[in-house]
Length: 250
Image 1 (cartoon, rainbow, N blue to C red):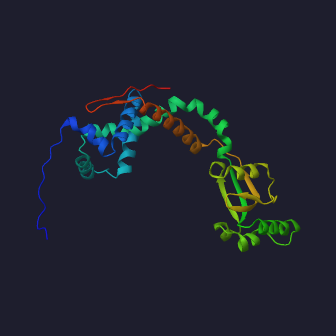
Image 2: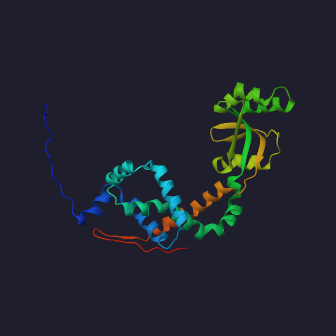
Image 3: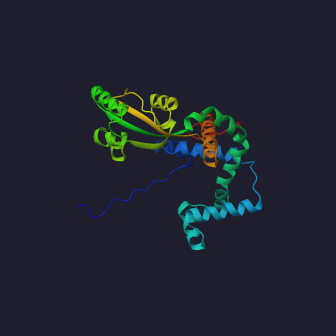
């Protein structure tokens, strides 16, 4: 039985930091933050925006009172000045995204709209082509309702909902299924097709055309930003004793 652990002293030199960050897989995050700092350095906030950003930051980290704030600063070894900079950072980054790509969002939306369209549909999946064909014939003859057959025969989780699935965005559906739903009329039952290991019968219930709302606008801005950020990260020069960040804005 060990009564006490040995004390091991270790002093990390500044020259060791970059190799250590790489060793602990922390370097990519540092590089990302350095690129962001370079990108937003010229973004200006009004006094009102600064106040709102700081208040939002305090709420997010629950450091509204001075005692909690001091403990937070101590934990992260930050100065009040660094805290003020950090509190404004997210808003500056948001403004940078708007200033850089907002005029391209509508074009991006039109090009990618099909991926954001949504479908509500009914589905029956079975492992046998013969069973699928038999169920399709029953549906065509009106012998049983789609929901009843799905509950009885479908071999996926949709059996619990009478075959009903959705709304689901096209980007999250199998491409073949998207093709079927795109060409279908609501209520129309399509003949069985093979989809992977299954034979499926599909009926479109509702098509929901995507709209460029605030949520989707933010998603498209974030997509542009991530693509740009990735290209910037690839151009950073890193050695054991220095990091050279040169940001090219679009």
